[in-house]
Length: 484
Image (cartoon, helix red, strand yellow):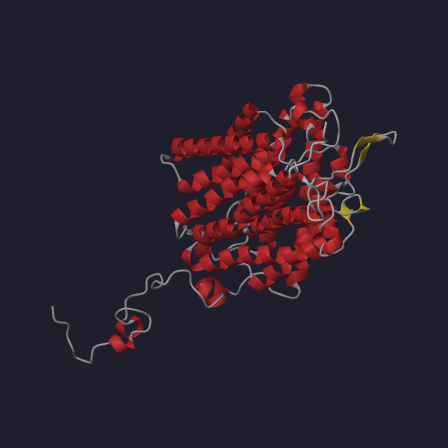
């Protein structure tokens, strides 16, 4: 019997080595693109539209700048600090991820090999079936969105030059620590703390760091704090829609393969987000008498954030429970606790990121420690026999691990972010001048979001002309009248 010959599409070649799974590689690059679209244009649109009109350009630009800066810092030193060889229990060795030999070899996380206490192998090194280039880019867009989410706490007053300095410093001294500790093979990874796709690494860290930075930067003008209406609610919905749909890549790409757990993660993500949006909206109707579009967006976000640490680890019914809680607990902290706690009142967290990301992320991490299903855990986690508390066994200890892991992220971000802000403040003012704050985008960038007359400005024929910004050739002679 003649030996079967593989179709040419599945034969190995220099561009398609035997370890390459084209389906996994395609899904990983698609997932990375989806997460990238959450930031650009997703959060660029959302930030530019959810703020007061005079801050639309500045808010959108803070997101765009952060994305670009993170890309360069990530490939130059950040990736290996987060996913490279171990330097410290919470940090990898810095180094570039730019060379051809490194980027086209099979992806691997060298610090992820997990051993039993007796030194024998428990879980092999993470080695996805695609090139390192796909891994570097996938993790890059996660790092970028963390900085952009953090920016939500600082909109409407942070000096753009200070923000330019803040982005690489926070990426280097804060984000990489959380990423290596929980994902790259650090001490929390090997202890068994569950963070499926960034509830702690991204959302808890950005929420806490954003709130901390907001303290050091200082508040917006009193007039802006008291009245800060969105300039375009429909565009806010467009940005939010990109954020929601992009979360398929956010959670679906984290198994590093297009497997059954990836499918579970995507479904759970949508279940939790939808439930949370509905619960938040119902609470708005019950207590304020009408549904709020901005409130619905907040509820959507808290649902997406809450499910993230457990997206591929919990069952569908647990995702609904998590959605109910993510739509109510952050709602309560934002609408009730915030108004009664002087610290929350003092710190001007523009978009309430501490509620939508820090509270929701920590809540999701703890709930994952309760509801993580053993079979699903075995598909993803390095520590065998992991489970949530409702499944007995070692599940009770898992809640402790989740609380401690979240506590480490909170503590590190408070300290690191404070030091970064203090150091930058010695060189560059963290807050814009009062004159800039009064004018907004035109003072900071020399640009405005809309080609419309300013707030309260009356039509002036000598300034605006009849038809356009440059209409001197259309003007009537002095004393001329229009015939009808």
